[in-house]
Amino acid sequence: MIKENKKKKLEEYINSIIEKPILTSSIVLAILAVIVLSFSLKYYLEDFDLFFAQVMAEAHGMLFDIAVIGILIFWLNKNGEVRQRIRTYKDEIDDFRLWESEEAAFRTVGNIKRLNRHGINEINLVNCHLSRTNLNYVNLGGSNLNSSDISNAFLIETNLQNTRLNQTNLENSNLNQANLKGAYASGANFKDAYLIKAQLENAFLIKSNFKNAFLMESNLRGCYLTGADFENASLYKADLRGAKGLTLEQLTKAKTLYLAQFDEEILNQIKTNIPELVGK
Image (cartoon, rainbow, N blue to C red):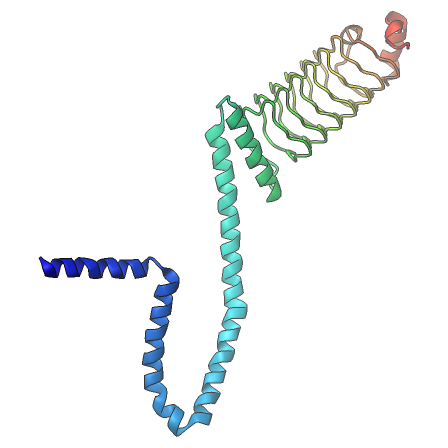
């Protein structure tokens, strides 16, 4: 019984040492130093100059190993750690997908911003809940946000260039000066949204909802606007030149078209049929 207790204590002591890497390394170094110095003692005493020259040659080799191999390994490890962190951030976004809660929204935004810091902007955010979050100045260019809920959010000067926003809910969000050039936002909900000075050039906005939206001084040149709803939308100084699928019927429902720019053909129709919308 006593022997078993001693054996158990010895195992616990050994394990406690192993669990401390610095202490373990120091012990190993001390043991190896004793062994190496013991075998090298006669060389120290008999031919120290020759032995010292050989030691210095090995020291130069060690410096070379540190300079080349050590730095390379460190670089590879660092890159591996970065890739692992990026993978973790993306996995967490997947974990919170379809979870409609405030915590899920803010945790997802945090991961988006961390990915941005690593130069990642093309992110899969399909069906993500991002309502009431702060995405100001975030880079989501080329990301996929189809069917996501980004209502009541802040996206001031956010980069959404070439981003997929089909069926995305952006109701009552602030997208002032946001970049949506070339965005795919068919069926998107921009109801009550602020899009002042937003860049929507060449965006696909087919059947998008702009009811009560603020589109003052926004750039809608070359947009695809077939079936888009502009009921009570403010298009003051908006640029709609080259817009495709835009009809007089859509513009009749707008709140104002004062100083807005159109192609000559549709501008003549507006002046003839709804001149009150282009007046002060």
